[in-house]
Image (cartoon, rainbow, N blue to C red; front, side, top):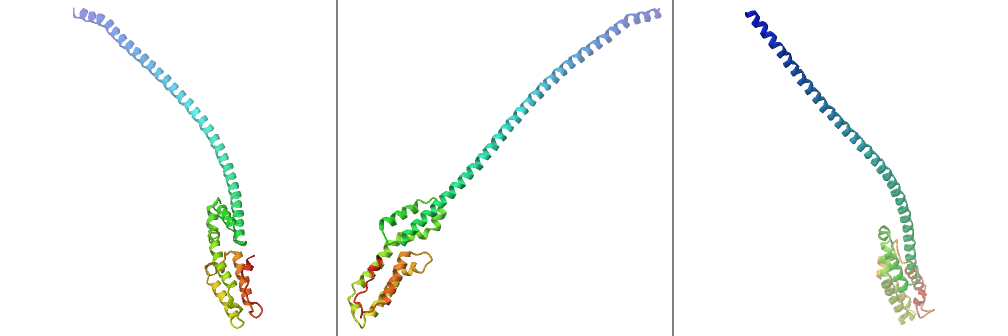
Length: 230
């Protein structure tokens, strides 16, 4: 009896075990298929993302190449403009030098208000601050030219009208006193012996000294110094 019972159990439970095992295997297979499906989708998604990023990188590289090309063009343009600026600065410097020379030529001529004022205006219009500083002494002399001239003229007129010069005994000594008066002027003390002078006034003073030193009251009663300004 026991034997038949055991056989019965085996006969009944064996198919159930096979069924359960088959069911588990089916579930495992479904799960594996599902996981593979998700994995394939994930791989596809990653591949699409990679393709998108590769495309963006290509665009960025193209943009960089374009920008590099533009940058090169800009650099060349800047170089060309710098050359032009350098050339123009050279021309301006040359023009400023000419202006300075013309202004300085004004100091070689007898004082004239209009000419001196024009020379000062030209000086102020110079482009180069460096040259303005370099020729600062020129502007100073132009501004002081009138005062220096007036001071000298007053002495020359005084000598011209000095009747004591006609004295045959003291006239020559009196004439020599005007050399001292000229040497005491602002121009003589501040400018005459300087490197940068007013050539016209220096030349005038030299002529005055020569005329005074050669003055002889026995031959002439007057000291004609104003005439030396012509």
